[in-house]
Figure 1 (cartoon, rainbow, N blue to C red):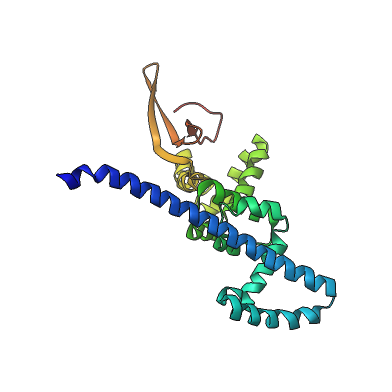
Figure 2 (tube, rainbow, N blue to C red; figure 1 turned 30 degrees about the horizontal axis):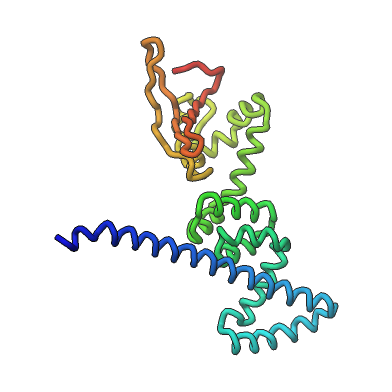
Length: 249
């Protein structure tokens, strides 16, 4: 009986300890990331001051050996070169200070090989906002989430005529496995599945509600092609695909 009475106390204490451990982990990760940035930046600056590429090739293996012997494998030559890349790609120290509270060193290593700064900023922001794990970040990069976002923005900026033309393009129809004599339902069936997947890729704020959602207006049944709920905005998002002028159907 006594042990049972103490359960709430134990849970409260465990919660305090776990929260403290998480805060320590975040702080340690942030400090480690900043140390790596400073090390990489110092080496880059030192080599640049000597203005000789040959000097860099000589000094990096030598200093890596000494640092690894003194401070462990984290400072082997391969890792030192990553730190140099890190300081070069993320050149603004103040930004690194801020972002390092949300991104781990492994996140940064995953972002460094990306060639476009816009893509790096996009994925870094997504990791920060949606708490992506390393695995999720790699998955999103492999699925080209940034490139898909760019395409979506370009499509939204096009005129209605251009959009209608693109949907009737024979190459587009051939890609979807449709022919010139396709019906609206055929186009819906070919597109909705991809569209549903794409919307969910835009962020974890979107939750799929229903396909062909039935609603009743003035006693008449209507059907929404795709219905989502955005948790952050607390709003329903309806998507309706039509070949001609929109009419509820």
